[in-house]
Length: 380
Image (cartoon, rainbow, N blue to C red; front, side, top):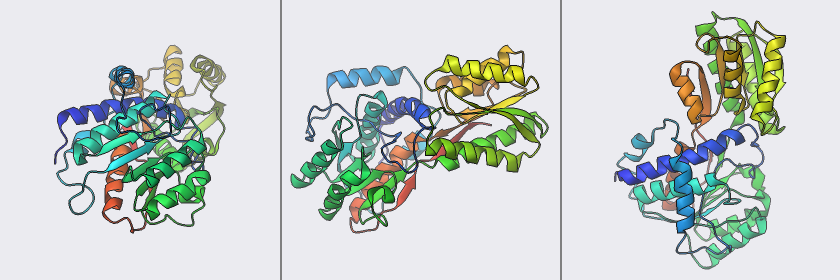
């Protein structure tokens, strides 16, 4: 059935909050560490027990205020939710879904809970209950064990604090016929392959970097005639994912735009946009012929545009490419000043995970798989 309009709007607005937080996390999440998640949302709970009444007025009001203040990047929400048949074959039954993120104090976690309610409830008639693990792996283990023992859920979506710690309880859940979506990849949990009834969802930061490099190569070809001096700025939060984004974006640019030269590589100052802008200013002063910047760091994208335009360079004649999908970035792309950004499509990811839970539920003995969070191109 088609998702009612009110559910589509709720899903879209809720994921907007998630996307804003995820922009900052995209460059510091780890491909090999499922605790470094960019997905989550739910309602606050003071105990690990699942409840039949997962929402509170305070949580709802706070989340609505957060999500109403922003618009999500363009996404295929209507097209995806208007599909008349579920992704799984046959007639999908409503599920009781237990959502278990690391913690719920981050607004994005609350936002995803509303997205689950909007999409799962609107398309399938699902009921969603969520528990705040307060970044304690023991709480996650105890919650899963209680859900299994009391038969409180049909499916679980977990972003673990410590994957190996929760692995035995998740295995017990699938043994009991409860299907699971787990953040990360199966080796994180000590599994040689995805067990029956359990699918994993993971961030591919290397592919994300490829997208940034491809977009910059397109800009160099389109705006700069195939050559030019560029700056590069990466995240200041060192991690495997940072390395993956930096390495793949620069390698892709070198392959697809050999006439472009990165004349200086910079490192952003974590959580300090003004300080990062100062770093870019100094680099541009040292390299006045630079005609663009490629950012592996989300917050640096608009900072770079500000610096270059303040130096008298027209945003429509230079190449600024980065990651994100925030409102100010989209506005700059629409204006033609920012060439474009690459973003994780968390709205599409939410929908694919709910669809996958329903597919698994129709045959809990079927082998699970590893999904990746979709990536989208904005502008360019």
